[in-house]
Image (cartoon, rainbow, N blue to C red):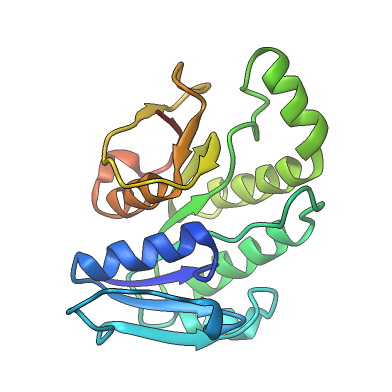
Length: 209
């Protein structure tokens, strides 16, 4: 499988790249700053890792990058509580590039809360603090659902650093009744799973421990 990862220099994106290489996949990391991508695979090297420098807001650059791949993973996001207006624009560029080059499969990291599905005080605070970011992730998710592509939208609860467990709770409606957090390593693990498991096609899945 030939995978292109957008947002590959972020913490979740780096986990996707690392795990895909460990699985023997050919990976293209699309990044604005290649020096920020630090993948350490002792004894394995990076022979199957290709770097492409560009901006996901540049539709032509995105289209050129997608050509020749089998699937796309989007770990694009925003920093902190920034408004995130560009998320939907970047996703529109991914969709256009995939449609142009007949690349049908995409897994997209959004966030729990895009459907206002987190209950109670926690849900209220999430909507208050991240309202604009969630709204733009929702706009991107709606575009994917209307695209005709084989999409999976992944909605992690609070992201934390931590080891890969390979076990987590999933909810296709609402959010799991777990601890309300999940490691980036396990989100990456799930993203790569969805590229191979057709039961996740056209599904939106929340994750936590």
